[in-house]
Length: 517
Ligand code: ADP
Image (cartoon, rainbow, N blue to C red):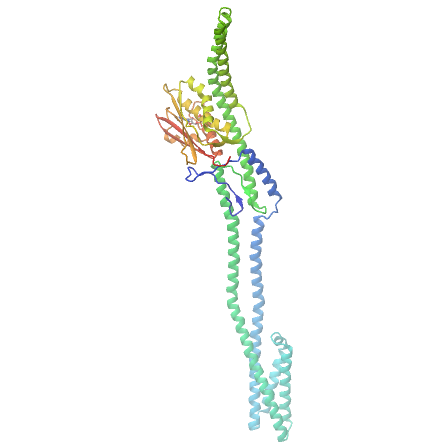
């Protein structure tokens, strides 16, 4: 399973599961070397921390806001110039209109020539006094053309003032009309054009902020989406992963990301933490195993007593009566000695086999055989306490994948607990049954005793490390917690059912192997 942040996580088994289980656990050594490889690999990747990404995202937003502010600072003075220019254009238009009005009066009634000249002068002054402002909005060529037209118009008026013949008057009138018409048309066009430009600027000022706001929203949404995807989702996955660790699934986080960041560092640290947890659990499992061996040794010593006594008695009898015994009988006695010695050797070998420390090796195992070995190991202990062990283990059980010693230790722990619970019971009985429906994903091994049972309020607590109801020196409180840990490592789970006074049943669910072999 791969998350958004690029972490690959193997799913821990839900328990109990409805669907068919396909389970091929990695052993500890494999997982360790895979983790070490990944750690070195991840350190070599380019680093692109989340902090840097956040800084970049906020820097982008800052640059954008600064750009918008600068744009506003630039646009507002431009608007101011346009308004100022419009005022000038209106004044200029007014002067040209007056100048034309008085010019017409002059040709109609022979009056107001001086007024016409005065307004022409005023119009020229507007252009020359505000040249700098006008040039901000208009090209120099156009301004010069207007100034030239005004100068020609003024020259025409002055010519009329200096006296003239009717032909000159007609010629000047024609010229004045031509320039006058051009001047008013220019003034109108100019004013209208600038008013339109100002309208456009105002409408830009109205819609501009909306567009800028929309772009800012997009940037913010993109940043929020990125933060959600890269940070919140990754955090969620890591939380999910810690829950898996708490549930006993120690599959390491693998990295699909191409770059290093805080999350890959956290994932690396979590993988190292899992290594540590596994190491410590290994120590716990071993120390509890040593304790179990201590318990078994007492039973084994007791068990060895019988064959050793038999050997001794037979050997002494053989020694004393050697001369009188017929050879066939002597041979029979020797065969007894050999048989008893082999029995003793088998008892000791079984214990040694369990006690020997081996490298973990997950392989396909015969569940029936593993149960048989565990039962043989505790049988001496059971016999000492006069406890009967009954078994109902069908042939052709589906194979399971596990470490041999871990699996035996798991069953030994549960059987020794049952033996302990029955130590005061005159009719102690332990039943070991296996239930393996053909299509089921788990095979269920139940160990039932008819001991005192476990009160309901304690049933959840008995799996806690160091929880024990046994007297000081007898119980460590680690048996069930180590057993649960072992079974979770194997991809299974365990249930307890018990009624006070009627006994207890511990059922171990082991995943059935369905991988090709
Ligand atoms: P320990 O055996 O050292 O006490 P365990 O973790 O194996 O530690 O067991 C915890 C407790 O669970 C025991 O002290 C006992 O009270 C209870 N328990 C375990 N198995 C049985 C059982 N078969 N019958 C009754 N109680 C049991």
